[in-house]
Amino acid sequence: MTADDLPLTPQDNDDALAAEYVLGVLDLADRIAVESRAAKDLSFAARITAWENRLADLNDGFEDEPAPNLMPQIEARLFGKPAPKRRPLFGWLAGALTAAAVAVAAVAFLAPAPQAPVVATLGAESDPLQFEARHNGAQLIVARVAGTPAPQGQVQELWIIAPDAAPVSLGLLGDQPLTVDYPDAPAGWTLAVSLEPAGGSPTGAPTGPVLAAGTITDI
Image 1 (cartoon, rainbow, N blue to C red):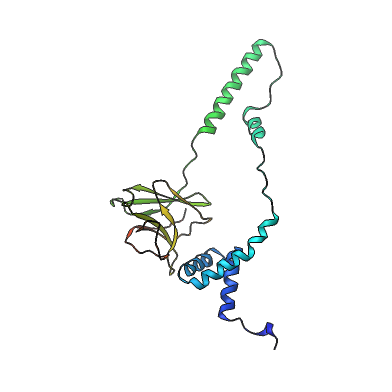
Image 2: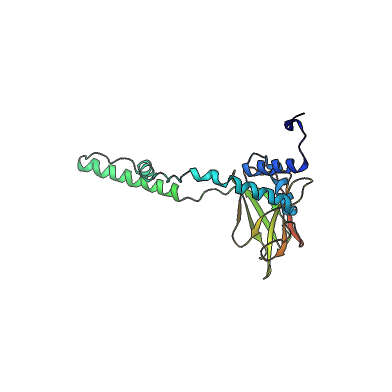
């Protein structure tokens, strides 16, 4: 029997799982499970940190690419190319039509983008504190729509909870909406807000009372 035939030890399995997490090859459920475990298992969290340090040098060979200058194309699409000179009457008419086209384009350009659909409401309509969660296809956006901020020295912390899994913190809620990169809004999962000390939960899990909660629904 060679060394390759020997079964992996639990430590080897943990090391492989930490590497897969850092490389970003785990699916959403496994990533959440890893993050939840790392919040409570300092030894496992250290393995993740070690792999992050090991792989950090891979980015050194890539230079930042400057963003392309798209303004000429945008201006060309909005205003078009200059029209050739015409006789005064036709020139006046063309100018009027161009001004109207510019006005329509400006209205369309300045019109506010439609809001992302609501995927969860945290708290009932009669509750003094209520939050709404929206999903735009790439991000989860959570905002307080009723009630007041946390008292001085405390914060409101947002958690996402998969079925039969531990809560995972998504961040702290303030006066502005909290935006979190989240490709999918997993229907059936729970969003909850708890009251925590300033800076957030010191344990990686909710420690204070749950202020509001709601279930994510299909868009």
